[in-house]
Image (cartoon, rainbow, N blue to C red):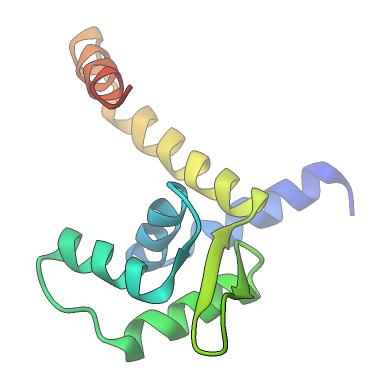
Amino acid sequence: MSEAQSITDISSSVRELTAFQQNILVILSEEPMYGLAIKRDLESYYGTEVNHGRLYPNLDDLVESGLVTKSELDKRTNQYELTDDGYDAVLDRLGWIFSKFVTDESRANRLLDLVEEEL
């Protein structure tokens, strides 16, 4: 498989992720985290409880798809980390969102202001 085919396959499968899975990738783009820390960030974003039965199967799917790695911190705690493909998936999603949102200079400046606030 050529590199171009590989990137296309990854982009295609990434674009079929649920919003919940995409949000997990965004959270992990900040730093590697254990499951309960991811759960807390999601609950903060959604403003409601996130059940373990929803979180962990989605994390397992992301691991299986190669977007996230899972390692053992101790016998009870796993750490999750974005892979290079996971990082590319987040960038792909942001690029698509920006391409739709930025319709004029005013909107572009609003995005630049958001980025500058984070720096």
